[in-house]
Length: 486
Image (tube, rainbow, N blue to C red; front, side, top):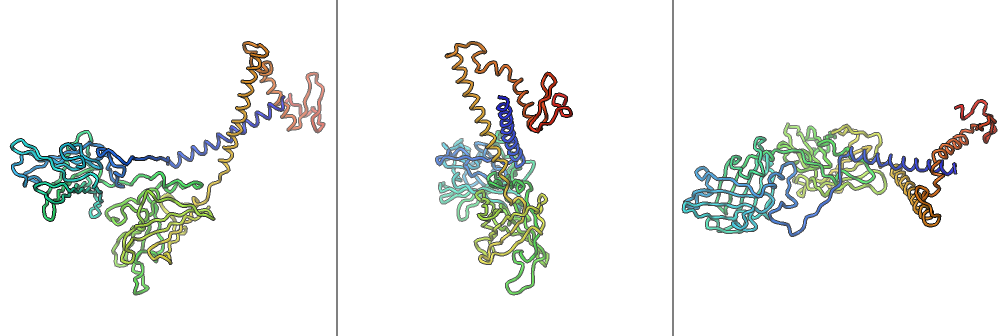
């Protein structure tokens, strides 16, 4: 019995240690990466007054704009010509919603995202749909690098606009222009408004808005997770910078000669969100790879080497450690009308450690794809491209299995034993516990079992209560290694 207790204690302790230690490692890893998987779905028959699932523009705040049921702006008819052609106008207002229909459907129609309200001197009111919500598109102001604009179109006609109508609302960066969804009036943030009727009606409004100031896009959770690899480091900096040799720059060597026309070039890479963008890198907006080039004549420019996409995934190699990432739809050039492309290969090298935000050029090799002159191949040596050991996870599973078996045996023992004691042996009270006298003296048995095990393993001799010597397996005497004395 003592041997059974000792072995059971050892197995239980080992199983618990394996399970909890591996679980702790996984918890620590999750906290380190800060990445949590998430999923969601949107029904096809979406409510037009609710934001559309694709309401977003990397680097800008559209969430605040989408929170309000609608935004309202009063138009100064003396300063702006939006309503001047409508006759004897008393008041002119524009209601608009971002990513959904404006809540004036009964006035402007169910599809309206931009609604023009004109109040006349005779107290009558006219509502006109000047933009359907399902035609909304977002555009970044690449020329100024300071904001974005949204456009809508509608086939709805009016007396002033018998043909198609287009509406543009621009949002310019201003840190002081905070919009409050609970206060829908944004007249104070209006910079100007205008109406053009040349080859079709075009309404335009220009606002100041703090959310139009560019910020680094958030991490896409599904992009920085790859089974078998710890790639959490890729998400930590805003981007990775590396400086390869100049012969891999876009336009490094003219087609008519061999003299390089570039002075230097650098790559900015971002794998879990788009590369941070400024107006000096307007060609690299919403890109995962950007090449900045300085030419011999001092001119500078940038090229997108591959657009960022939430659908882009790391693909593990089949035969060896490592993985790769394929980027497409970069800057369109004279030779690559469909856009530049980049294949990024992560190759295992346990000694290749990257400093945060910087990749030493000794770990980088950039070449052209000989089969596709529009594609660059960037080879990156990195210790993160080496597969993680799975021994800890295996130990975790074994540990929990052992614990489950032991707890199951104990549960069966107690249930069956108590039933026999109660119904067969007619025991009551604490005596219904099977082997009650044994468990009552359990601590004594456990102590004896551990003491016996210790003596067997260490070959120490035991002494009886009368002081006589009992020898162990080796026949050693207890004069100099008496357990009780120890």
